[in-house]
Image (spheres, rainbow over the protein chains, first blue to last red):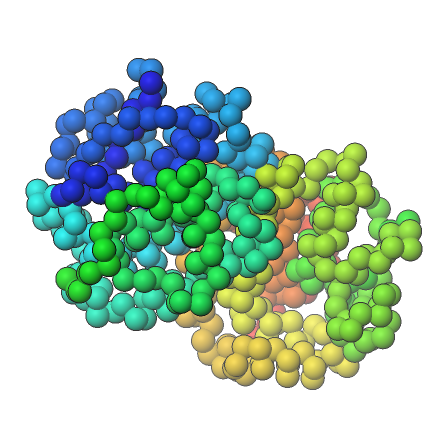
Length: 236
Length: 236
């Protein structure tokens, strides 16, 4: 019996966290069912394990509490080693660490200023002030400034995606012929933007679109069927 | 009997190509000896296999000709499968492709404008005009302009190294506890800068320095013992 605490919007069915999507995909990869529980930023004290800094995802498996998407993926790989591998062995796991570091250290910092303004209106009202304040401090810019810089930031993001395009020109998934946790790590970021209805991040002819479609179709369309906000964001 | 054609400078002992270093390290990883042959850009027609575009590395193994560092690594992994693995299995190979794409598509384009001006004076005189013309066309800037932009380009390069630092904070090598071809792919770029005596690319307190030292020490100091030009480049 697995329970997953996920970030939710005002609509409790709207689950958009990039890190929670990594875990959702990893669970499906392992063929595991989970009960998901909506959590919002202001529900500080409702997470199991009473972490000092409340953050999702948190996974509870038969009483064991595991926090942070990367740790959860390693836990699932170890605990459910009979299922399809998330990493493809020790070499795959070591090299995946770089891809996840790229996703966290390069992709998210470039993508977040483009997506965060669209996150704001879909949040629970009690989360909005916290979200705006904390993100504006992190980015060193107001959401209105981010919107004004959008075109330039989009240009930078698209250039940073070069290694993703180069890799996926050679193989269907980052994991090779089949998707791995590296795919879920990167895809979660794009699914985040999609779920909150952020304006398009990729040019229409970007070959990455085909890979994203493949990811949306995996596991009987798990990510493709998710609740999303229609793209309607018009500026902060 | 393996032969490796490598780019050389005016001094035939100076072997600085980042792609050739990848192969040198891969051969050592597999415990293979090779005879290396100096090649210069102007020796167009001297490479085995008569490629349309003469480029090194080219490896000849018992009459079989294999060009391009990535193809050579895959060839060695397949042909010498009994030796230590370069990739750590299928998952490792698939994920390594992203790291190599990052090295080729992000790291090299950011590093090359900082290193190329230092390459020029170490080249064979017959190579220098070709090198300057082709590189200035590729960068869209003269070497003198590159030197003037050095500080800003250095800043960008160091920021792009974030995922490398994040990964190596968690494990000794990109390959995990032991180096893999992914390490050689990235290290080759730094060895290139080192061999031609380019001004330092990393800040003195950059934690990547420790990883580079480890790489220089591998295989009885193979890369550390290489002929280098003393850092003396003073501008184009």
